[in-house]
Image (cartoon, rainbow, N blue to C red; front, side, top):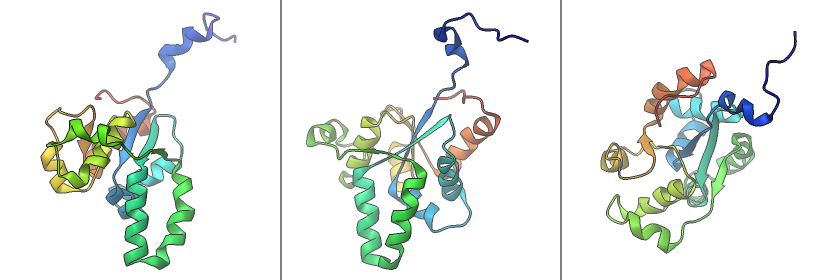
Length: 171
């Protein structure tokens, strides 16, 4: 049996799957690291598999926040975090500039603007956060170029498609 292609690599483009760009807030990474189960842990496990339909993102701002919190509250956990982080293969978005923050002013609390700007700069499809206040402020307004969801909402939306190897319908 021979291959059924039209010859050129571009003829295979319809077969390519969309990679969903998933921006993880600090709380999702921390929750996933310190829990053996639950939605944040499952998301981290999925990202560590390097699946062709998912690209994990986080911001340099988020990593600095995680490291600061670990150093302050759980310094013994810092080495485990630092050894586990590369397994997630996250694309780290550089710190946003003040110019990046300016258009987002008023959409959320000032402390969350670097997270939002990093997600925008990373061209995220989803911002996954466990911050209920942030979800309530920006959750479903369509103001931002990505969907903001809780870890369990993210899994409800995309896990069936991820497991089936098909791209999700919504984004």
